[in-house]
Image (cartoon, rainbow, N blue to C red; front, side, top):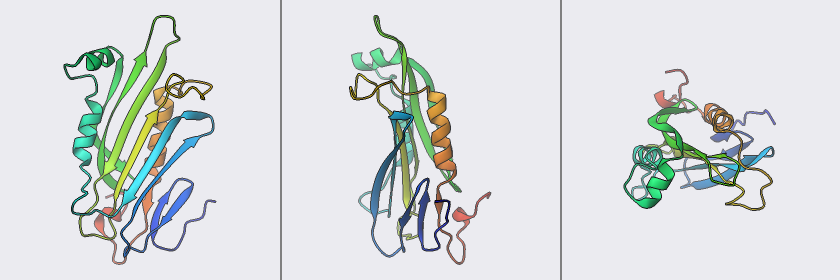
Length: 187
């Protein structure tokens, strides 16, 4: 705990994914906090492959547009939209990616109001580069209606967004020698 590994790989909160840059990888891991089990943070990373490019701009845009289309289902969602997130640039450690999402305040007759939200953040990586993998981070809330085993609905969006920002801020790729500009923090 609180140790920085010396081998090549990706540091994530409470974990490390070893990667020497020579093996094709595709790793997905979900975490949640004990005090907020209804919010899932999924981290997905791997080498960029020619036929599996991650279009983070389109995903961020689509994630922020929930409730804006003309279907009956979209009209039902639209009346609960409280906040749209992006699409906008967002930092994942020292990398600049894209972010988009939506936060809802749901009120239904006979039920206590609750918040539901989904935020996508992603860096598409570089094709042909062993040191710049794609990094996708999804934050998704689940309500007691969706998952009856939950004892409470998710916490307020602001609280979960602060946690997401912490996860994103402290993600790191191991440095290369010579250093690549995208891995130099603060530039």
